[in-house]
Length: 410
Image: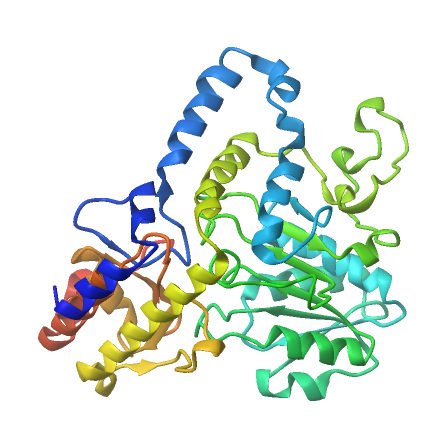
C-alpha cells in the first residue's frame, strides 16, 4: 500500500461507511455499477420480514407492517436523493417496465408529436422498449430516431415528443449535461425522460430544479438494493393531472380493494403502480437506503471524483495507457463513477482480474469497466486494482486458454 493511498483513506470522511457493508475478505469489488455490495442492514431486515412478518403475521402484514405502502414510502426515501419533492417518486417494477409506462405517457401528453429521440449508443434495453412501443402503436403514432450524441441538440425539433437519454453512458461512463439538454428539449416543446441507472445514488441530481419531466432509475446498483431490486420512476407534478399510463393494473386503481369492474386511475404518481409489489425485494432496498441518511450526495460525489481521478492518474503513471484506451472523460463534470478502458482482449483481462480477486466487468465488444462506489470503495482498493491490472498486462496471462469461454452472463 502506498503512502498516498493510505493517506487519502485516512482523511476520507466516508471511510467509516465501509463497515456497513458485507465485503468478502481479500476481494476488491469494483462492480457496484452493476450490482451494489450487500449492506449489513439488509440481512437483518429480510430475516425479520421472512421469519416474523411473513412467517408469523402472515397476510395481516399488508396492514400491520404496511407492506401495501412500500412502493410509496420507499419512493419518498429515494426522492431527496434525486432532487425530487414529495409525491413524485414511486418504487415499482423494473426500469424496462417503467420506461414503457413513461414513454407511453410522454407520447400521450405531447401528441400529435410521435418521435422518440435518443442516442445511438444508449443502453440497449431502453431502445428495445421504445421499439416495442413503436411496434405496438404503429408508425403513424410512434417513430424512434437515433443520432450520435454530438447531434442531439440539432436533432431536437417540433417533431420530437420525448427525448430519452441515460444520463451516464453505461459503456464509457460519460455524463450528459442534464440541464443543457433538458432546456434544449423544452425550447422546442419536447418532453425529457432521463434514465438514471448509472447516476442515482452516486451523482447529485436536481430533477425538480431542472424541471425534468420524467425519469427512471435503478435500485440494485449504487442504491445497493440487491439483485433484481425494484426500480423507481419520477413524474413531475406539473404533468400528473393529465398523465395516463397504459399498464392499468389493480394497484394503480383509485380504490383497488373495491374491485370495481372498470378502471379509474389513482391520483398522481400512484397510478403508475400496476401489479402487486415484490415485498422481499422492496424491504431489502428500503433497508439498503439507511446508509444514505449518514451522508450527503455532495460528499458521495466528491469522493467519487477523487476515486476515479486517482485511478485514471494511476493508469497514466504506470504506462498502462500505452496498451489500454481510456474511454472515460478526464473532466470530472463529464463522468459518472466508473472508469472504462478498451482493449482487444478485454474479456480475458476481466477474467484474469476476477481470478486475482479484483471484481470488474466486461461489456461487449471490448470494454473493461471499473465501477467505484464511494460508500465502500477505498483508495487502497483502486491502487491494488491498478497494481493487479499492470501485472496481468505485463505477463499476458489474460491470453491463457482458461479465459476464453464466456458464460451466459458477462
